[in-house]
Length: 429
Ligand code: AMP
Ligand code: GLY
Image (cartoon, rainbow, N blue to C red; front, side, top):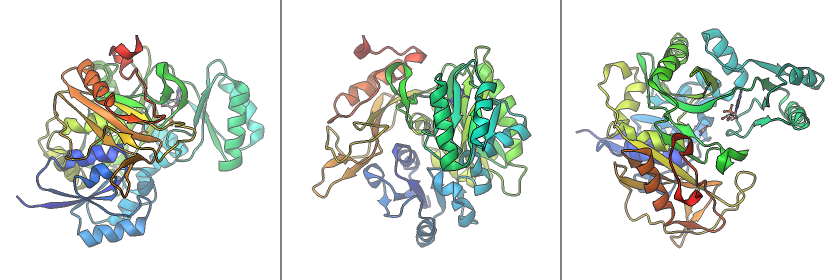
């Protein structure tokens, strides 16, 4: 068995989940930049930021990394995969990362590939806002800034004044704004591994974007998720593949450098089971990653490495049959402003968690280790607790039980993760 050096980029709960999955392969020697206390348990953290392209290139070189796995979108949009070439990289080149970096580019790509999505207008003059709002009246307005905003650059509102004010300020700061038709239905996230040789859809999951229970309050980066999402039935899955994934794969691999990485397809499934694309991301979702990655079993490295070499279609791959649910613990004030630097009680990092059926574990995100060894909060989303079991209800029970043993002053979490999938919550009754 030959050791392989993997450099993982990022520092969130998503990257902790990726690190846990990668390290299940005994060949993997893990390095993370910059990582968090969770990834430090599994390998070596390096103090190089995820947006420090030169630093990351030098690190990959110094480590002679066999594979670079990129968690967040920012370095991909900056061209990290291009700059690393020919070093194998899991994560697409800049020309494809634009799918997430620019919503206007994503809309044009979908038009070219014939993929269903909401109709839209790109507005650049404030004098055109009224007209665009008229064109989409009769349903809530959906206004999107065309910048990387971590899921927070979107306003969905019934209030025309608020819609107008948001559009005005977006044009003032960004020079343009996208106004699109409201899509009715239920959301789901489909993570698709993709390279020139083929694609592989992972089971669909569902995020909980609003901060509050019953999907109330402002949008966040994601407050919890579960997998599989029952809204994606076999019939819906077929439509997603034939109408969206196949044409996108054909489009993204007809270019000089094919797409190599994961395509995150954010979907709205309407009442007829017809899927529409809400957004593309060029990375795993957070927290969708936490509930999907454990399904790769011991094979995450094999999958990622195959993708980086255009060999996905030729490897024999199996998925674990299980249900997962994760609950995010967020800092006081998140998402508008997060109070950080508070101690987290009940969390011990004595040994890395096992991510197997019948267990629950903590994925660290905005957590730091102080000089005295104490773990404190350092971000908006502090951690998420993930349960894995034969059913979503059991996974939820495991996750919430583990969460109740943790405490963070002012911290908050949703008590209704999975409710749309029929999970019941004694705390809500
Ligand atoms: P996005 O950043 O494009 O994913 O948008 C953030 C969230 O806004 C999505 O997860 C949806 O909940 C909501 N959203 C975005 N676009 C639409 C749309 N066209 N119709 C309804 N809801 C939308
Ligand atoms: N959970 C949604 C995202 O990662 O964009």
